[in-house]
Structures are given as C-alpha cells and as structure tokens.
Image 1 (cartoon, rainbow, N blue to C red):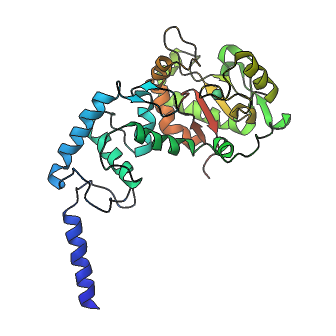
Image 2 (cartoon, rainbow, N blue to C red):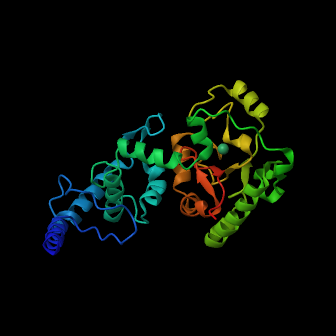
Image 3 (cartoon, protein in one colour):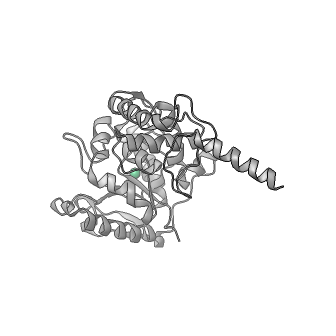
Length: 297
Ligand SMILES: [Zn+2]
C-alpha cells in the first residue's frame, strides 16, 4: 500500500515537472490542462509563448474578421473588456498577462491552449456571456415570451436619471439596484460629473404593444440589434444606459464604429467589471443594454 502511494506521488511529480508554470493560485482560475499543450515545449518557453500570443492579439484586435453575433465585424476590440473580465485579468488585450489568462480559460473549455483570440474563441466567450442572461436562455429553450410585470411593480425614474428627462418606467427592484450601481460608478469615476447625461437611462420598460409597433414601423426585428416582438425591455428589468456616443452617432446606434467607441469608454469598462455586483448583465452586442438578473445573496 505504502509502495503504491510512493509510486503515485512520483508519477504526480513527474507530470508536474513537464508542465508550463502558470502560477495558478489554488482554488482560483481553471485547472491545469491534462497534457502539455502542443507548441508549448516546457516551463522555460512559457513566457515567450505568452509574448508571442500577445503579439498576435495586438495584430488581430483591429483587423481580424470575426462574426460572434452573426454580423461580420473587423477586429475584436469591442469585446476586449468583456473578454478580459471573463478570463480574469486586468491586463490590456495585447499583453502577455492577458494571453496567459486567456490560454488558461481556453484550455479549461477544450480549446487550443494558447492565448490567441480568434473567431472560435469569441464564439465560446459569447456562449458564456449569453448564458448569464436568463431572459435570453428562456428564449433559447423556446419558453413563451414573458408577460409584462403588473403596473404596480414598475416605478417612474426621476427626471435627472432619464435621458433628457423623458418619462421612463423600470421595475422597482431593478431601479433600486441601478441607483446603487450609478452611485458607485460616480464615486469611482469622478469625471462622470462633467457630463450629467452619462449614466442616465434612455430606455426601460417597453410594453409589448409598443415594441410591436416599433417592430412594424422599423422592420428588421429579431435581428442582432432589434429584439423585436419579444424584447427584454418588456420585463421592466432591462435598462439602456447612456455611455456617450461616437461623433455623428446616437447613444443607441448599433454601428460598429459606435459600439467600438462605447466599448472604449471608462464607464463601459467600469460596468463590465462592476455591474454584476448589482445584478446587471450586458448584452455584448449593445454596450448600453443591461439586464437586471437579481443581486447575489
Ligand atoms: Zn436595450
């Protein structure tokens, strides 16, 4: 029995010796992949491999053809903040630290053990992001579109919380969470005080009838940018938040240029890291669209 234990221990040590050292802390991040990944020849090559992946990412971030949401885009910079948060790094997207964290994340999901962002990786990241949205997952399961909340569950937001003061209703519990989140953002980002429109809400509850009429009037429903007849806004828990706008664009313009502009703002990057604490998740194609899913207990 003791001999068996010694053999098992020796085998374990031998296996560890050949693996790249990734400095994982116990209980955090992904487990080591079961085998030494192809192309990663050992612990000494690991920093070079991460630097190489970082160079690849630096080259692809604005040029790689991708289509995580079915719409052809150039580059993945608009998804870089969510990607960094997902893989657990604060490092910039063209850094070796980012590549290392991404390599671990990919390996734990059966993808290539490298730190490169590619279309397939974005597809798997998208799955992780979308699974956080119960409204969407219910749609995927083909459950019926939810009924709008009772009128008593909705609350009118204050004029100073509303984009140009327009009357907007939001579910009372989601509104309370939004207020806590907005206060925390203003504490962390004092520059928000220079533009009182930032962080205001430009859309909250929308009745099914309203969405239907918009859908008919504008066409293009059920695409990536128009949820159409069954929108998360009918729950009263979805809020569209002003993050700014690219020159010539509106706060909700779904052009690649505007979405990229918004993804680069400090406010969006703050929300990506902090909104989950207040129970909000983002629809990654629309940096302004946040759904309240309840705060963690
Ligand atoms: Zn929205």
